[in-house]
Image (cartoon, rainbow, N blue to C red):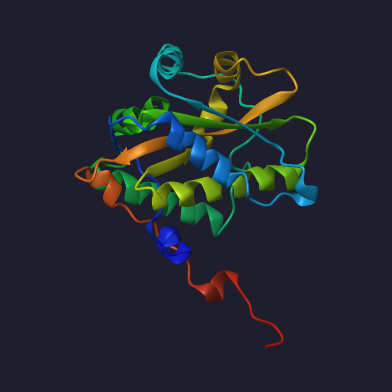
Length: 219
């Protein structure tokens, strides 16, 4: 598979089959993803993959606490501005449209939102953590690790959904991972095999044309 094919095929999957993913494959993908770049080669990531009983226990804890905990960071800046606000709004509307959930059907929207805590049925949850003392450049490094991992997963016929939603449960996840106090959770990720029959998996979010965000200078 060419890299461009993996980039075009990757999408956020929100309905998975229960088929297990071998531990050896998960480890192989994580080790390969560690070739992702990081400033100064500091490799600031700390990664945990959960399946089976540990993952079931985490899901149960989250289900028992639907209100969540105090997040350690804002996933979106307060007062999101244009055009970011419209992009996020349109993406959300497109997602709920695949499920035929009306905008005013708040209970149904909340139920779908809560599916994050179930990893959308994925058999593996991957959690990406970093040292609290690092700054934005190292957060970006972890993002590059995650993207590399997602593209490698596509090559193996796997699907993913990156979920900063898990930042709502920093204490619960930290306890499950036995995470030391110096590290914090950045993001979770669902990993598994996509349910190709699920309507929600046919969603392809829009991308703005190059002219709205890019420029070529001096060519």
